[in-house]
Length: 258
Ligand code: 2AM
Ligand code: CA
Image 1 (tube, rainbow, N blue to C red):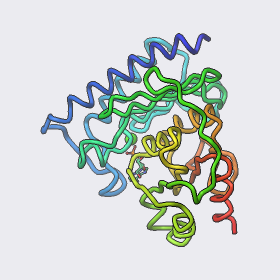
Image 2 (image 1 turned 180 degrees about the vertical axis):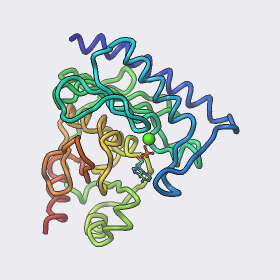
Image 3 (image 1 turned 120 degrees about the vertical axis):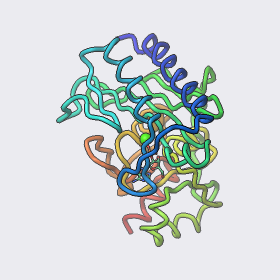
Image 4 (image 1 turned 60 degrees about the vertical axis):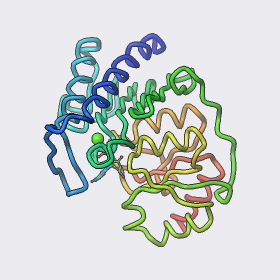
């Protein structure tokens, strides 16, 4: 499998999805529904973009499996073979309320190992993507490895539930860092770590589609990406995560286990 050639093609899909989403922002007729909570939304565009990716994958890779946020396509009992993970809009609440701070994401795993990943920061027209063994790029520019540094030398990003449900641990982390930032899109928050704008992103359990591309791209860039207890990620279930450079990662894990 020539992953570099595949990435060229998939980048076009992800670009096109971004163009569709950008244009959709002025459409006031888009239907919005609540899923598990008033903060957990799905729009017509989540379903449209997911169907767009599913059609492209089925057309080009009919024997690959698909795991998407908004639908069921294949029975997936383990991570063997090729599995595409789709998050058509990450940060749907931001898409609806802020009309910014959302992204569209697509990742390919082979036997559980991330081989291609894409995070399209739609508003800023930046596509973060990586091919296993070929580095991580923002559009055409290669990302430099993140220099190792301590928690006290950087900002941290948390998800809302981390602040609400684990205030004591959140406090311990934020107190030691320079400050805290919350965007509300796991994909864009992980991009902040990849680009060394924040030192760590720490969360309560997130779904595989929320973390898949950050996991692949972070690993490719040499960052540490584990559960908050320091154990490896299991894509077959929800995972509370920490992505950070190794020193910051170790410091944060110790606050969860002590
Ligand atoms: P989503 O927009 O794809 O659902 C917000 O903190 C981040 O958490 C987003 O990446 C959002 O992804 C994800 N998320 C996962 N479960 C959520 C929930 N129940 N409600 C809101 N956001 C959720
Ligand atoms: Ca989503």
